[in-house]
Image (cartoon, rainbow, N blue to C red; front, side):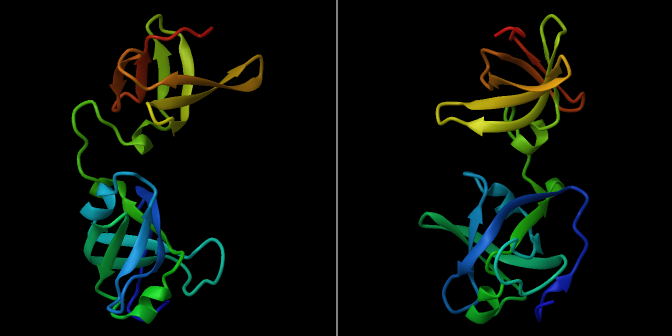
Length: 187
């Protein structure tokens, strides 16, 4: 473990939200590449959990906890400082580290807004009660978000895509793990 980093357990609700790109400046700040266009989860979490880079040099092993002093947008990137990272050398040692935060530390979503991570795994049913599949992933096409569903037909794995727009989405029931859609199986 790097000096100053605390060994930790990854929270059960940990979500990977970005990675550390490089050092920024000489006072221990570092650049972050968030996986979301809206990095509010990074800004709201005061503790980040790090796993070593998947590729390249590994300067630490296991899970490390980082107490964040400040995270903010700077130009077209996110920069952050942490209590245990005091200089450029320490920040460079974190290059490539994967950043996780507890899902419970995400800010609350607005009405009719959802975190993609909360939609993955939900069952999708149409108005007639026909099971359409399970949300496997979401795609951003620029104009709209698209649900990618997986389902089985004649023993073969299939995919179906449904635009995630109010014209086709009747209801998202997170506690019930279900999305109700106005969509037919033969579309």
